[in-house]
Amino acid sequence: MAKEIAITIDPCDIYSGKALAELSQVPYNECSLPLARKLEIYFIDNRNNEEGSDVPPDAKDNISAFVRRIRQMAPRLNMVKMQDISGLGLQTTATALYFDCLITQLVQISSRIDIASGISFGRAIHLLNVDAIRNLTFLCTSFDLISGRTVRLIRLNAPTLQCLRVSSHGCIDLSGIIRDVDGSYVEYPHLHTFVAKLNTSQSVPGRYTFDGAVPFPYLRRLVCGGDYPFGDDLVLFRGNAATLELLQLTLTRKLAVTLLRSKVFTPTSHPKLQCVIFPTPSVIQFNYADDPEIIRLMMDIAPDAAVRNISNWYLDQVPPPVLSLFSKHASLQVLSLPGPCLSLWDAMTLIQSLPLLSDLHAQAPTLEPMPAGVTVRNVVTYVRSNYSPIDTRFRCWHFGGGGSRLMKDKVKPFLLLALACPNFDYAATVYYEREKFAKLLERTIGTAAYKKYAPRLRRLLPYRPK
Image 1 (cartoon, one colour):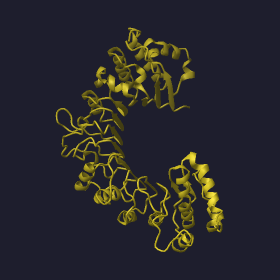
Image 2 (image 1 turned 30 degrees about the vertical axis):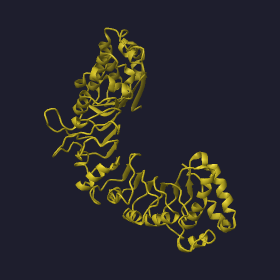
Image 3 (image 1 turned 120 degrees about the vertical axis):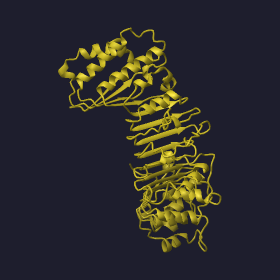
Image 4 (image 1 turned 45 degrees about the horizontal axis):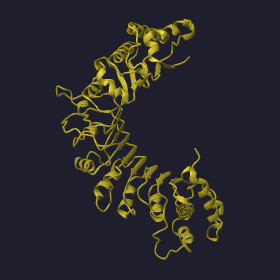
């Protein structure tokens, strides 16, 4: 017996009673779903009803009857997920009222109501009775402008929300989701995922302080893109060190300095943090010489994390002090360093220091600068004598393309890495460069310097099978 129901429907068919009539024609025993727990509703985008002139006067009665019929079909229903409410046609006061009615009725049959919406919901928020929209567990929406009504909608559902995703393309202030109008703090006791993606160039960080507030005590996943929304107050990180598992944070110098001073992150502060992602804004570049403490912060957060992604570094070469920081991350399995260009020698040192590392996302390594006394004539012998074998779990290096000339320069470093690392089998490039790279690999393997090791080197593939 089905435990989930999914329906695609035109909201006008609910308003007019057509949907109920069609359900009523089906014998009860044929549409009974006694074990169903979840209902997903996909609304057909209906833009021809913007003025609401075709909505019948008994629309609310028809909505109530439709929801009652759903309840009869699935008496154990405890979750309703509305996948895209933009199809509800919320452009007028009339249609907004019907949405209020629908939400109110669904709350009567389900303990969980989830909403995933497009930007039209943000534009129509001023038409809705937000007080009627309660018991939301999931709210994912995009707004031109996060208004007081939007903040109130989020705040009213704080007791039940489990996942909150907010994005905005205008000036915003999210401080109202933490502090109520009477000055009291709001707590989200069940929220495990908070995603805020804000327009960096226009956002207005909250200028308030939230002394003592712990609004998100059980967060497991925190994604903060664009400007940090709460100014100098690190309220997002307060009280959830024991539960946080994933952190994605757009790191600016200001935020990095604030984090450093506050000592929110220490080597033992976040025991469950397993995935750390630091996408820095493209206009901001960190250089180790100028920002050693900031880069140290990026490296020191969650030393036991299995996945680490640090993007947009500006490093012509990775200096030894940075490489030495990786030695703390013995449990690291996936590392993304798309900014700096590693030399083959630094790369092998890095791989040696990370015994569990299996995947590295970075630019292709270079042979230069060569170690003292090493030339293209003796480089194979040098690698075999000084690095082989690097017996770790390292299997795949993911890198981009770069045209015929640049691709040719990438072949030998990977072949040398394969000679040093017995488990390295995938030099994975973009799909449109794979055939070209495979031919260059085969051609180079056939030369005198590498021919002796052909059986091993032919295991190297330009992609990683799924």
